[in-house]
Image (cartoon, rainbow, N blue to C red; front, side, top):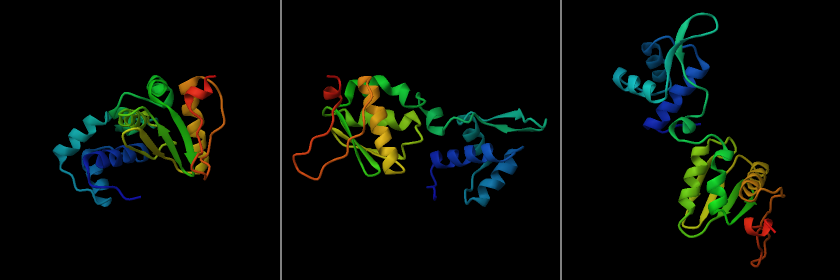
Length: 185
């Protein structure tokens, strides 16, 4: 996987390094980042460490090292932690959810798609690779078809409070999807 040279990508790389490697100093961290092709000043690194919530702590073996909470970076930058945390948003704006290969297509009232997509992005769900929002449609990219189907079930359950199977689009132009409103009946 390649990462862009943005502040967010750099901070994600720092989190990953701190979770996977014993890092005892900023100089060591700068060297590790340089090996990954990321050149950063000490001042920027200090700001990044503060922004991601990294602190010096004591590891189980008694050594002093940088530690960071294991929550996903998106969860630390935003208010949510998992789909359950956005159940209210889902129940307010979801019209329908349909799985199509590795995509979940979510329909909302006009103007609500970006609101739902942003909430899904901040939820930090491992099923969600990313989202794209239009005016009334959110496309959620998942790692595979089974994850998309499972995500639709979870989202519909959160919207309606009932269990159901995912729907997949039919090839006919008149195909309909299962909406949260019809599932409440």
